[in-house]
Amino acid sequence: MTKEIGIGMLGYAFMGRAHSHAWTDLPIFFWPLPAIPRLIVVYGRHEDRVKDAMVRYGFKKYTTDWREVIKDPEVEILDNCLPNYMHKDPCIEAIEAGKHVVCEKPLARNSIEAREMRDAAKRAKIKTMCAFNYRFVPAVRLAKKILEEGILGRVFHFRAMYLQDWIVSPEFPLVWRLRKEYAGSGPLGDLGSHIIDLARFLIGEITAVTGVMRTFIEERPLPEDPTKKGKVTVEDAFSATVEFENGAIGTLEASRFATGRKNYNNFEINCEKGSIEFNLERLNELRVYVVEPDERKYLEGWHEIIVTDPAHPFIEYYWPPGHILGWEHTFVNELHHFLDCVVNDKDVGPYGATFEDGYRCAVICDAILKAAEEGRRVTVKY
Image (cartoon, rainbow, N blue to C red; front, side, top):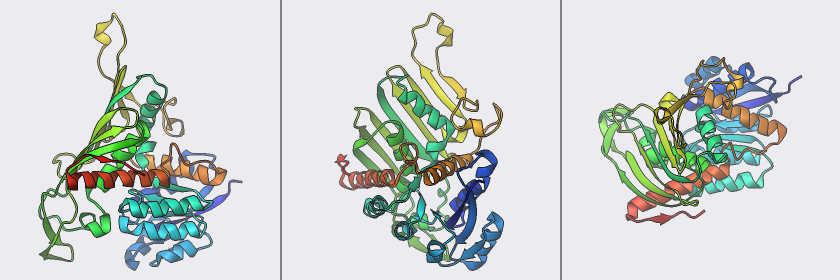
């Protein structure tokens, strides 16, 4: 008999829905499981909405007090999908209560909060993970495998961009993501944290950065009263250069003003024996260029690998070759990894992002902010 494990969810909106779907789908794809997830309780501030989420997602009960989720004896894993300003306190309280914790990215609003969370996790005998789900895209994992095996040799460049366009209109309201006290930063923490984490995951530690930021629309209508406006207190876009410990250099860019781009998370890695390119909007594909002495010149060029064969990462659990996966499956892969670590006492890293990874990402974000504010190169120090 497979044991059961109780899940307590904080938040029911975008990420809460994605995580709830993943927990529910785990037994469909990964079988046998280390344990069967049971959705015990979901938290939200608005009783009518969280009650509706309980019914929709299949939770046993709901609450409007997040501390009740942590106190619930049936909850063994706390899944924190709340806004950034609600990451630190619930996660630390859950850790101290002996619960295993998954926390959405960015780990916190800044490196000070992230360090507190990291330190709490280090003191406890539980598992923690920062939910950088793009580590669990099959094509990204294949890219890591290619790099780890040294097929492409020395890495020269890493360039990445994460572009969206959902706030281009000046009439878009002043939501929490546009206010520093709630978000910590703009696309730097929201989108940039993803590509910073991928840079560390694929290439290695970042040692120094420069940065530039812009806020294009400085005031927006208040959600509660569109006739009034409030100040936008985060950046709308950033660009940065990065230096890696292994000698590679790179560029990072994120914007919510990239018209025509909906969820364009793209990276390219240039090495001495070839290159790799990935685009999240085509997440089943990995583009690879290999430099090989060959008389058949007509074979030279970029090649697209459709990452849907059984030999590719994660695919053995899903569909026949050519039947593509979706964005939601990255969460299924990620939470299966965490569940396995919890039940079988395995290390979350290096393939899952630990709270240490979340902290280091926050340090790099803060360094880019500082570089932009002071107009100089900043050394990254943990």
